[in-house]
Length: 135
Image 1 (cartoon, helix red, strand yellow):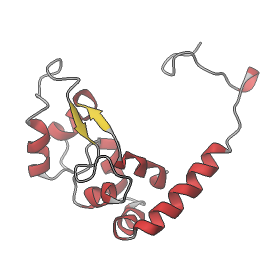
Image 2 (cartoon, one colour):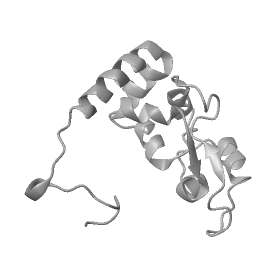
Image 3 (tube, rainbow, N blue to C red):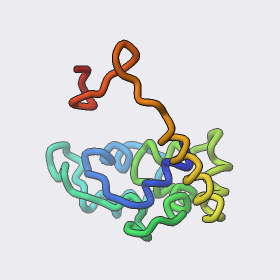
């Protein structure tokens, strides 16, 4: 899962999804939080759809900078920063942050493994019309 999270090296997030992290959490670099706060007002409903890159250095390049951000406490999403927050994944995040080849290798293996997951239908599962609501 940690390797797959590295997919966040590309893309953007809406203010509404990272606002609690940049205003309320303590596991974030204060300068980084202030930078993100400039485009994401504290009050809900204001700027909810403003965007910020998930990877601030290279938002359009697939690389290991996302993990370097986490080590520096500059993960945009709370869930991302949890990967490097004194827990069991710290050593793997650190490894990916310094060894892009290992990250690429593990990412490929994890994507293949995820792609081989069988679709559950019928009494064992369902294909949802809306992912947030049971059909």
